[in-house]
Structure formats: structure tokens, C-alpha cells
Length: 179
Image (cartoon, rainbow, N blue to C red; front, side, top):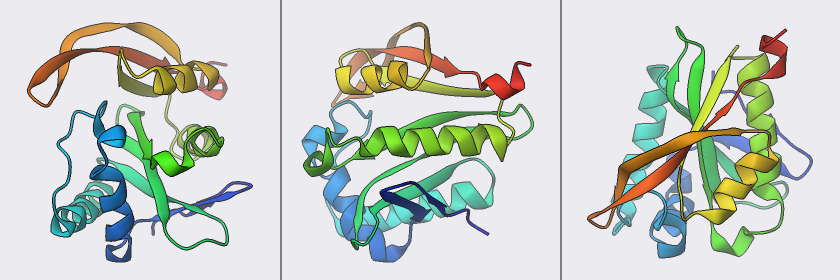
């Protein structure tokens, strides 16, 4: 059973084929993917393939990806979740994106806060990591604001449009697991 979550303004829910348009709107937008390490989506079928990918990762306990929807409004504005989820080692990496129409409204802070809590309390994660392009100031600032610690730089770690980029690596170590 997929865990649907709620915040004050958002519903974090399972992504379905009905969300292909929303997925396509995000991942076909250069402003969203320029720091993502992924090529732009060119077709709606590629968005449907992403829906399948998210579902398969959840089924295999390798990842957990929520669609971000504003309460009372139909349609995804972005996604958020855990990649490289290892229940055995109690760790995962956070990943997220939101359509530029919804930037700087506090939605991502709200969503990150909710899944950090879910990851530590419900999934029992003792480490939540993040890998972010050095140039992605908004994401780097968000992670610091949310309590992540910068651990270092991974040189030429991710490629975007055929060019290698350095990334910062971050960790969030839930306090409840440090006691």
C-alpha cells in the first residue's frame, strides 16, 4: 500500500498514469532539468515510462516517489521522494523537483520536511543523503535550511548535456536515531 502523506497545503500521493502530463510539464522544462543529470523529456510516453519506473522502484523497495499536489487543486506541481533506498542499511537519498510556476512559495520546504519525518519515523532511516549540483543554489540553500550537513564535493560526478559537473554531497541524520 502506497503511503499518501499530507502537509498544511500539499498532498503527497502515489503517481499514476493520470499524472503523465504533470510529469511531462516538469521534466520537459529546461529550468527544471538543468541541474538534474537527466535529458529533457521529449514525449508523453517518456513521462509514462517514468511513472512505471517510480512504481517499480517502490515495488522493489529501491525508491519511493510521491507526486506533489496542492490541496484542492488537481494536477502535480512536482515530485519528491527517496532514491537508492536501502532498507537493510537504513538509508536513502532524497530527490525532488517542482515546476517553475511554483518556485519560491515554500512548497518544497513543506514537502521535504514531511518526507524527512516519514523517512526517519516510519521507515527508520538513520541517514538521508542528497547529491546536488554545485551550481544549484536554490537546492543547496534548501537542504542547509532543512538541517542537512554538507559532507564534501564529488568531482565530475554527474553529467548534464554531455558535460561533467561537480556535486555537493549532503547528509541528514535524524536526531531520534542519534540518541
